[in-house]
Length: 111
Image 1 (cartoon, one colour):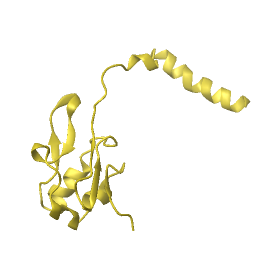
Image 2 (tube, rainbow, N blue to C red):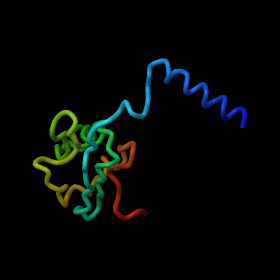
Image 3 (tube, one colour):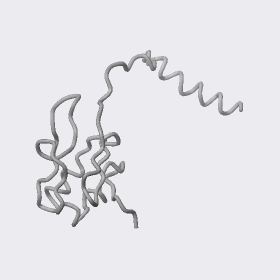
């Protein structure tokens, strides 16, 4: 127990130096849903960290431009043009699913 409380104390000291507190981050949360329309791919936008790896895989490796950034600023999200669901032919290569570091894009049926 002594080691654990000492660890917590070490973590608190740097945050106190910069006056960090849980109340410092306030504001709206994005209300996003997940897309289950596609027969192979589930797109859970709540997990997305907007890294763009799936966009890059789709554009440069697969040579299609199905995914891209939508909106700007706080409301930025990864999706298809005009908010449409992923096309049915999109589940053939699943390169974006393999590249996603946080599991935003996932297979509907696990092997």
